[in-house]
Image 1: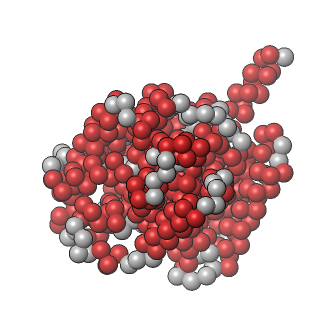
Image 2 (image 1 turned 90 degrees about the vertical axis):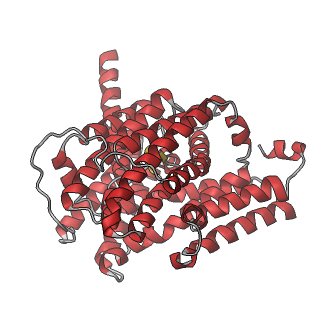
Image 3 (image 1 turned 60 degrees about the horizontal axis):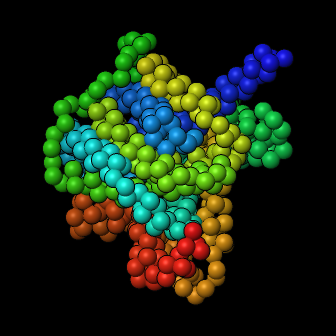
Length: 438
């Protein structure tokens, strides 16, 4: 009986591990394609970029699980790092892009070392105290708001066709309904199968209706290759890029802390102060790894909390299995080629429910606060400023210094920083009042 129970437990962990792997894929696939296009990379370069992104995402997740915060949180390309790569790539001349990529390698390496050192210092608890329920609530709402446009443009077929596409919209709707039905009505193993089954059905329907975008095809020369170190060349030092990278890593400390915090809420467990400190250390190590493997900088993804809530998968073991699968996939070029056929519309639809959960977390945090004029003003101003900045055209920031442009052009970060200033500086409450919020 015990052997049977262990077999069933192992099978369940394996299935759930595949779900984590698929979930991680949806946060990886788009990165090499979009960044590669910004830097005019060849199909071969984008394919090897995909391999390294798979390897680093899996390895970074395992680093955090075993030496970092030790929570079931997926590591993936940070939106801000992603934006910096795209911004710098599109603003530079094609002849300068090779050197720029080498400078970005150096920036990631130095930022990783800086953050790892910071992770050893006993100041993380003070940083964590900055993230009151108002701050985390505003952060989560702005996070989803900033990405909601991309979600709907993709799921409605506008990104692929330039206009509303009924077939794509219908497939995405069917996929979302399947995920909802399994998540809300399913029992046992079936409850956690929703996202995986939804992706399989959505991908199959895309094939059935002939909607797969083949794009440029690259035929790998080998079935097995080891991800290369410094694939973009030897790192080059540039003070502007290094300064931008260090500032970005500091600003994204808030992302690391908020991700750990919301996953703790999803797990219904108290996160220890030391876990935040180790999470910062782990993120520093992972940024260093991102630099030496020539990929976009990674960070713990807050959406992991939504995935945990949707699927009910709370144990570490399935995530370890999923991360190992993703890391091993980075050694096989043909896997990277196959994954490139996964429609982004299907990937976005699979993440729609977890991101909706994230919005719910944010609203719950804000609803738990006293509706005083002070709290309402902090919340309203922060959301107004953050969302307002999201509608600003990128051309509006051309006169801003490059190192500062990457911050002020990001509505999420502007709103979060503004909220921190209002909460702790301009409208700071007495210590007794702050402690009740925590």
